Length: 145
Image (tube, rainbow, N blue to C red; front, side, top):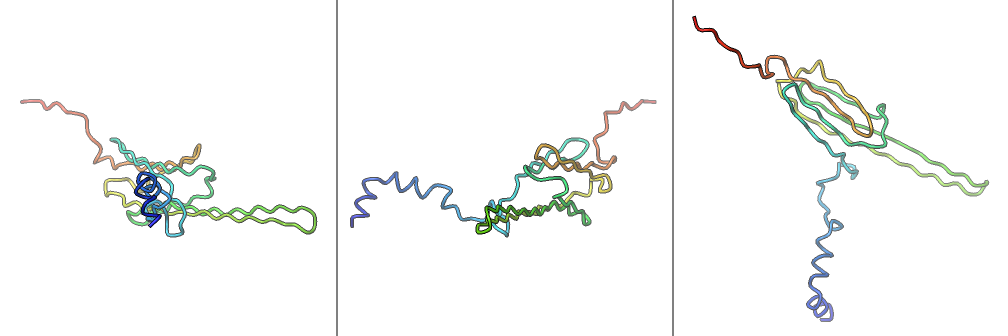
């Protein structure tokens, strides 16, 4: 009874408390290993596609990019181990393991053999060029005979 009186007096407090992200237990932002997936931007222009993956704190050797038929997979595994020793009786060890995998189905209009990637300033960029025959052609004047 006391809780119901309290909640009637302060309904906004309870609503705000339970509406926070603290209680969002969906798997929307997590991989199967409960790690956060990196954000991805995909841009398209007349020459091709650019996939940008936000992964600060990694090295380019931490990434693996595979192409299997038309499935492009970007993945990473990073393991770190920190150990602190103070004297002979105290040792502190911290392990960290980060991994993710993102897959994209490529359209048939891309040039699979010419895909390139670059890692710079915490952003992995994968360039996927389009085939020449699907790129827009400039307007052409047709002569009348």
